[in-house]
Length: 184
Image (cartoon, rainbow, N blue to C red):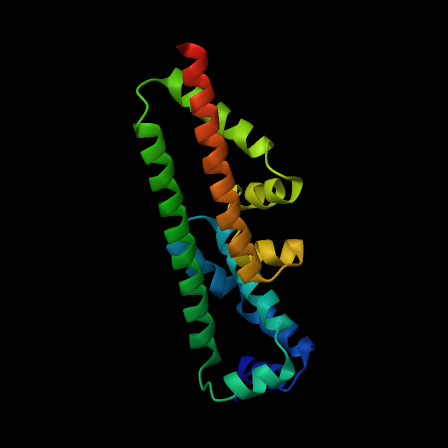
């Protein structure tokens, strides 16, 4: 049995110091795998770091009941890192697609700047908690990360984001109507 396997077994039994040793042994190889997918070293380090934070936060009972059957812990960790990277890439692509769809609809840079200014104004009109939530979302934080930062459940974050998007949509339409009224 090699060192990382011993550390893994100790971690499963509730020894968080063993997880720290596992971190030292596996952090760089996992980061290299994450860089392969993301092409961004900082993002890769964040993904691997968040994996180890998640492992640290797991209850001893969950570790033993769910992961005790895992024979190859390195393959498990690599699969988790790969999936987190693919999730990151999917989210990034979706955001880019949405931004491009919005910006393609406008024909000039002035219109694009106006749209961004209007959207910023709509966000500023939100309630403080909605504004904070939307700012974290727009900065690229996942729902899970937002839930940890704001001490909310992930489901609550999803629900609040949905309601906040509806509020922005309503404010956007009110602003467009106001602009159309002023211009006419």
